[in-house]
Image (cartoon, rainbow, N blue to C red):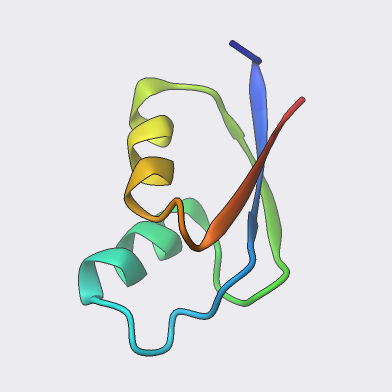
Length: 60
């Protein structure tokens, strides 16, 4: 497992369920193309799994 993850929003939140929007906002992703760096934890992995079809993940 990598220590950090770069997470990039690649698809819009428009028309998505509120749960997906809350997960993305919780990770700090507010617009398409934005990239955030997060620690690789089980909680973050679970959030990524919820919106995997909308984000791209790169291990650092």
